[in-house]
Image (cartoon, rainbow over all chains, first blue to last red; front, side, top):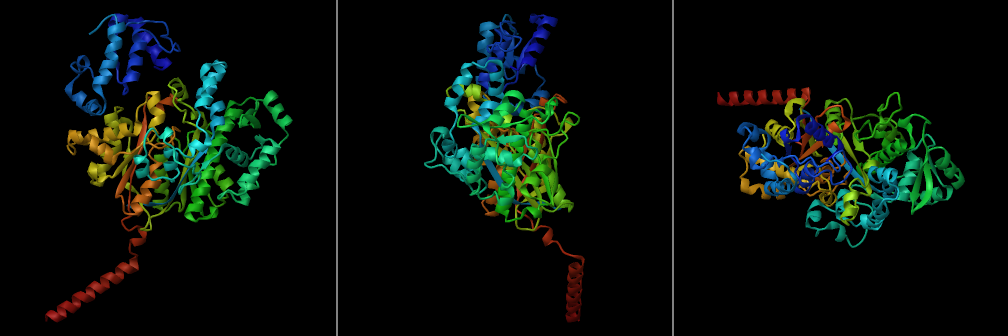
Length: 109
Length: 511
């Protein structure tokens, strides 16, 4: 995860409280999604950014996970997300993020 | 609406692993931050040699030494299933070795900024003397060289960057100003490398087209470098500087910038100039991006995977008035990712694929091949970026499903038949659809393909001026007859008089 995004997430968690922030990922690659999820829960695994050694423990989901899809307006979903749902390996993405969430998130939806 | 013909195409690679190892952004930053890093120590072990690069199937497809069909059948991984023998020249261009490319850098330098060591300069001159597209006029620009001690002094005391071949310092690139960062030695080196790549592609293009440099009317350059000084950092017209070296004395030019969307935008610009009659023979071209060499090498080394990003990519396309023979760029059905189109992949694909299909009255299946972001998957997959061309084809197929033109179960078949395998280096603007143009033009001219869509996408947000991305697309297909097929006023008059005479005859006969 690039350093600016790490800083933004760190700032949001500081401003609103970690219990009031949910991270929704849109990554296309399961490995990348897992790394992003690890970064916002256990801390930056590359030790390069502001979240290095900062385990925020945020609840993190991929946009394709049922918890997020259920909260989304169907029209918006069809217009913005449905095409990529056909393209990407949604179960691998969800699994990759869920593994990190189960291990490191302090709260869940 | 008149169109512009694609008269010829050229594609070259410059195998430049030592420039990449020293000045590619990833190793360069690592050397700056952690000069003793394990990654830097390990990287040379994973770099592809010239011999292997000239046997590597995607490279051979890029220079036209292998068809796309042959590439698709080549066993994978390509990096360990190399061709039996190296091939330097293909029907579109060549894979130039690094020492000769350093000579070309010197040739393209008109401000005495590149100094090659005398002996090295001489050895390069001997090689370039037998080069098929570098004539005496170009070669006389190669300077005699400098003493190694002088080069060492420039590097030690005046901010010059050493140039390496076979691990030895063989020259340097000097700064063009002591303070101005836009004229610092690394900026000059990047810009000259980009210029030199364009010059090589242009010279191959002219030879292939059988055209003299004096016949070129205009150049549109579309790389990702900014040329200028601190008062006008992106002042531009690299195009004209390229035309100068190639001897295009009757040409001028301009630069088009839009990150990776620039080549498609530049081709639309060039085609519009030709179709309107404003310019006649227009060359659209770009050299490579030195900073992107070994961009993903950290992941490659970590996974003990070959670091394949050792080649600069470049291309040149000759656009001429539609004479009814060569395939054309259709200007009546262009794709444009507008400001208000939306940023989701769905919105982008709709703007770039669905909208032009609608304008042209075509279905998804009417386009034989969609060419978008043709990065070599063996480079991007280990870096976690996926198979980019395959992902693009899947997105187009999924949009076809949403538009009711494809069964969901047929997505994989659509991807296999209408998508492409990636064969272009991760050089930003280079992979953006345009590498397929040469293959597409040949297939259309031979009657093996009806049409292709070339799609470019650019990450404008990287410049921090907007959060938007960009995109553009066009269709390539056989000419419908061309402007040469249209009738003159006198010809229309003759046809009308003949028709009236026929009518009079038939009335007389009826009586």
